[in-house]
Image (cartoon, rainbow over all chains, first blue to last red; front, top):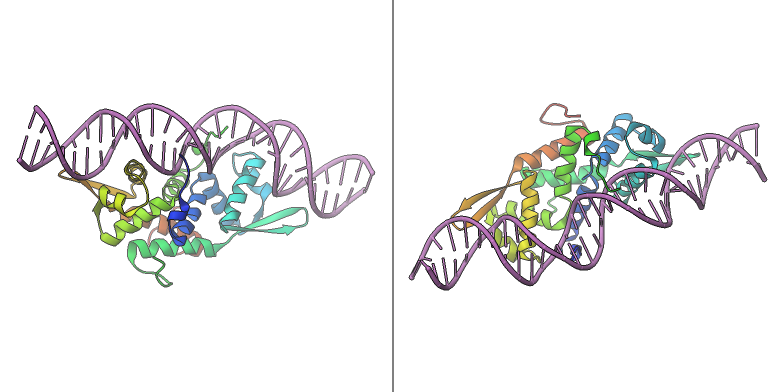
Length: 109
Length: 109
DNA sequence: TTGTTATATTGCAATATTACGATAAACCAA
DNA sequence: TTGGTTTATCGTAATATTGCAATATAACAA
């Protein structure tokens, strides 16, 4: 039916899936990479950087914000975005535990 | 239009996005976790383990196979699935480089 | 052969995602 | 106030995803 049964899975399974899903589009990967590269920038810079229209970029930023992969700080007229490394780290540590059984934090499975 | 412009992004951006997308559903996260936990198992075990019908599990397995997150070995009548840790490692190392600038391999950005 | 078991595929409905033009909202400058 | 700049939201079309019943396929046993 296309109904997703997220309530049948654990909180951490849904958390991992949501973060992974947000990274599951090349435009959003490119946004994260650009933000890491320049440390932080405004939405308009990303519009110039990527081959997508401004509303599309804005929509992708919203999805990255929803899962806490980025943060936005208002700076006068524009909004300055930067990556929230904690969320990236959460996914990285999860994968570390999965494939190497080694991590900086306690088991989350 | 819903048209995805994957050709406007780099190969590695598309590769990362495709792997992340495959992990972007709690059922597929649960499948990976179960495979890691029991080392390997057949499709039927996953059907018993997860709250989804057999065709749905089969479809999720197909998507995980498409991005090389799992491998399937024919064993008589059934197919034995196991996780391909190399692909998990690829994503893990990518995230390591992104958020900590430290990795076991050379820069991929 | 027939029957059983295990998995994949097909077809379809419900829903979600992607993309963008048009427009709105918020802020500052003159 | 008006005008410019920046970002968000709305509306909508095209496409993708999710889920499953029904069916197909493949391998084996009797």
